[in-house]
Image (cartoon, rainbow, N blue to C red):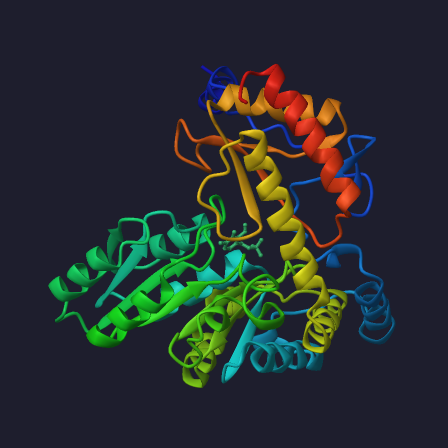
Length: 391
Ligand SMILES: Cc1ncc(COP(=O)(O)O)c(C=O)c1O
């Protein structure tokens, strides 16, 4: 018995079940057309909603920041000082989102790992949607709080659970705003009403809502007109913003508390000056104009309607996330390979990212796609769908 046998057996098991994740190499900047494994393909699966990952103004701001501030923050912010750039990004994000304050983290994942354990201690109960993102699940695992997992988008079940735990001093409700695999929306108005009725805090993960939902892409809280009624909005800067990083925007005292108690803030260095400056440039663009957000939605509406017209099942999405439901993981991987052979890059998503039997191709729309790009993709999807008997 070798000491790594349990690992190699697990890897073999993944391969046998068709669950081994083949990670392709990106050999160019990410755009509507991207070089993947040495081949130029139409990119239909990155989270580059607004095309900002290779946007000239963001790149210019990043280059300027490197000249002025260098390449790294050189320390944990609470130990050796925080760069003024990070502070500027935080106040710009708070103004953009319409919140009292914001604090930035290394990623959206880290933002959840910071916020959830800081707020939910031993005497707390967390109420979490069963389809919440892995970073929320892990954030909950890092607490000693009691956990109630409520059925997906079920406000009635949530209200009953809140009633059952009415004597718990700190109650924290957590939900994705836009669910990342299905693209459906949290019933946020009902959740907020239930929270207010029971004195609970609300944290919404807006990773797939910002830059996408609401006026100028201000996010899910803006979309539902709930400003001031959601305690924490967790965001990522790696999707619509096109860069990397995360943040929590919300009430002043909570944000201040996260600067004191959020462990990824206290024990890990911040994002680089180039990242931060590029994010500030993204906020500048979105504040001035909503052109890219409109283009994203035009593309999403067109592509979804055409796919449905071809006979594909595109699930329950209410956002530009467009799942093409296939069921079996092996069919999904085969579908994805055939797409790639025909110059379309759209990855299969299978268990454990989605439940077993719910494998799919997850198409991610971008404002960068032209109508010709979308028509080309539709042609290829139709060919592959027919070849595999899916449509
Ligand atoms: C809902 C949700 N939250 C958080 C994250 C993590 O964001 P980041 O990539 O910035 O760590 C993701 C990324 O996939 C996500 O989909």
